[in-house]
Image 1 (tube, one colour):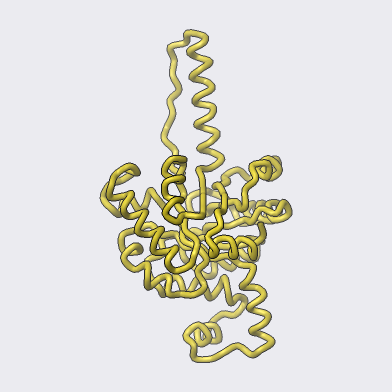
Image 2: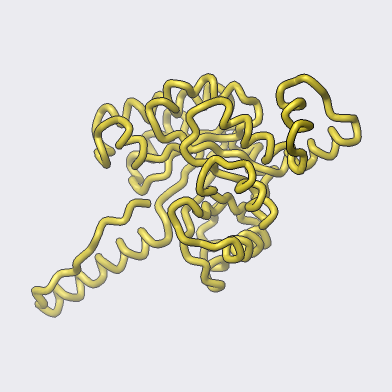
Amino acid sequence: MNGQQLISALRSGQTVYGTLIVSPSPFWPARVRQLGLDLVFIDTEHIPLDRSSVAWMCQAYSTLDLAPIVRIPSPDPFQAQMMLDAGAAGIIAPYIETRQQALALAGTVKFGPLKGERLRSILAGETQAEPVLGDYLGQRAAQRVLILNIESVPAMEALDDILSVPYVDSILIGPHDLSCSLGIPEQYDHPDFDAAVRRILQTARAHGVGAGIHIDSIDQEIGWSQIGANLIMHSSDIVSFLNRLTEDFSRIRTGLQDARSADVTRVNI
């Protein structure tokens, strides 16, 4: 998918498939394409990828019709613009808790390259763009995806207000941060976590935007899709690598009657 197709799919409720890609290897994009995904999630908040590497990844995945969606380190409009300039089809903005944050990101993603007072006045409804400028901005906005990370109790409580910003295309729940905000860190099977996820997903879908959670539990993903989650952001390359090789080496050691076991540290996606 390209950005325009992704926006249409997310808002219409069509199921969209993606995964987090950590590796900047030039051999990776062609292999990832074989998975039949719609997008790739490139993270610069928790993953040490420099701007040049991200640009190479965005250009490669775009060429393969896999929309590269980049999570920026913080909800900063200038960081969002840098990733769009690098070739990102859209932005994931982390830890959004207020309407003002969402509106500021929307200004960059949907109204760039306007900045400063001119942009502020248009977003506030005080002025309108000239017809030629309006057409130009509309064409750009139709191709740029805005996804907000909802990762806390304050964000959940303010979600209706946040989604009153008309330019948001989807929300994506951050399970680790949300579980910590709920006081139940990494207890993803806890009833309170499930209730919070369901509330967020249903609120988002009621506003006509896409909704999903970044997790690697297939059963939970299927269950939550039945109440409206249509952004399936499953696992990551590094987690899949670790899980598969852990299983493989366990079988090899068992077959060789080798008592040694792997020292596997949990990886949070």
